[in-house]
Length: 142
Image (cartoon, rainbow, N blue to C red):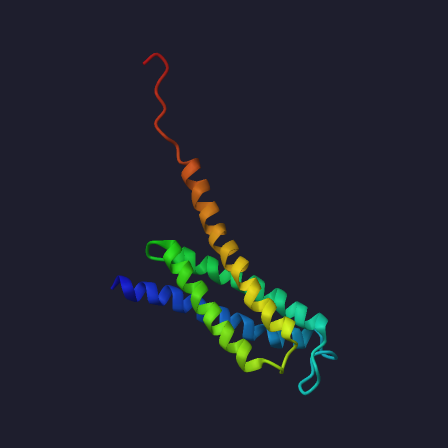
């Protein structure tokens, strides 16, 4: 049963990242209707905006993965990271020449620190909770 929870944690977090990234296209289309037109090359400014959405989604989804991990959080984060890099490599290969090269490479490179930040956000909060837990203080005069 633990393995199913782990698969759901990592797989669900990665699927969430795909959904959030796919939702960024209609959002950018609504925000920049004159620049984001099918059939026309996408301006670099919108590609950078898309990359920003990607980084935020990756941080959030890594946080979700770490938060929902049923145990050994780092192992789950490493699997989440590895699946993302493998799928990102495949997407880079498939889209080579369809988008500027820097765009695909940036996503591959930015995935690494984004996942790390998402993991650290959970660790930082958990460490803070441990530090705030009151410990038994000896009474004066004991």
